[in-house]
Image 1 (tube, rainbow, N blue to C red):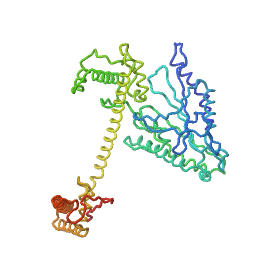
Image 2: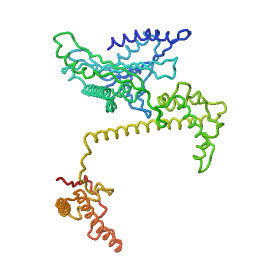
Image 3: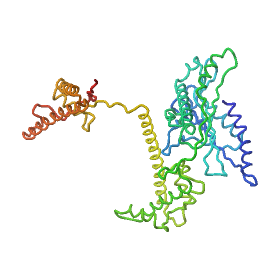
Image 4: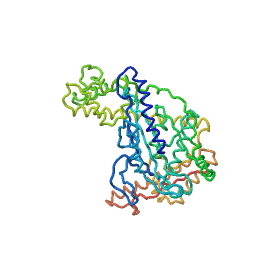
Length: 487
């Protein structure tokens, strides 16, 4: 893996310089591209930053670092809090890679004296300074842990094999989706490694991506069995090229589909509503705020929307920002007449919070619609699922009340009553499910009548106990008791 990383470090800046010269032809500018690097180590469910300096070591002389959380933020982005280092030359990048790899966990196996025990994820972010509002490019290099030889795998954590299997499952699902052009669940959230590779597996990602899998095999005949085993692991990663996807259709309630003009209009409207609401007191504040937001063109928003959302900037760019970053952007676009920065901070936080809410609601709504469509297609293909007979616990009442009623009637009487109702329904060729439910309701109603009678007598006699000494409010910590008719 070190050889690939070194070659990339050597060639990356030369290639960027060629492309940059094309983009800046006729202009006297500095480098067009800016490179920043993060390096993460993943061992099971624990992730650490290989760039972060640390003086602590464990008993095996491995550097001890604090864990880094890997999860989706409220906008759906996976951005671990890692140290991002800007590199300007191939030498700086190679030195950073070498230094980080020296901190990686290793252990001896039957084949190698220093086999890696963890996954390493090197991410190179490429920012185009000529197009500052374009999405950053990313080159992600993943070195999977150690050897897959059985003899060696016994010396390693089994979590590695689980990670690899989950990665293959995600790739298979991606290939199936590309082939069928339909909705296929990709389980990339079930594993930290595939979460880091979300841009590859997320079907909602509109940024083009390519994945290359490199499997290391040996040309020696003595290793032919192990080479065959390695190829068997690599074979499932062969995928059908994904079909090109056009832009998402515009949806006024889904910020992911907005262009720059629509994002600008939404920000203007939201800041106007908040500015108007702050001027209005009383019970009709919300109604009046909406009216002023659309009618009062001279309303001071506190910031220049054109600076906060310049040409080429959309809601997709805004959702990649943290709340503090958006607030800082709004403060930088503050107008001269705005004296109270605290008010503008609150407005900006409310606006970005509303944007995140719209994004999450749109994702949930889309997922729900997809699942309903899948259910409809399945029903059309296989027909409606047969209805099962249900008991009284499917009603609105507390299922625990049913246990009290069973104890009151005795289980033998309960079963006999329901069995008689079912037998009668079968004989008369009526609805067995309805007969079962009606019999259960009758038993419950009889119990309720007795409970009401005993409570009335207890109240009249000023006693806390019921007529037969039972506490009708008892609850039993047992599971629901289901009685289902099976012909």
